Image (cartoon, rainbow, N blue to C red; front, top):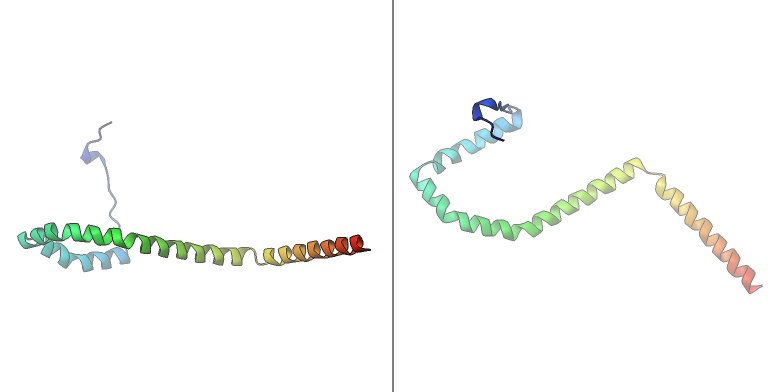
Length: 106
């Protein structure tokens, strides 16, 4: 299926963060659009890709840690009594095991 580019309507996001991002990136866009910028990009591209590959394990570990913290906070906020109910059930199981062992010994 082919869609003509004039048939597609794109909405430009114009919020505060995008405005700041555009303001920060504008100078680098100007510099990188020059002939020297193209040459520097061509030279630096393999090194940037290599550093990106080296940083992937650290990034994934950080994302995993952040996800674990989020899950812990959500579990703590949503089920505060769940842990107490589990402890009560475990204590009941321990009492029943102790009673069974005592009865066997008699």
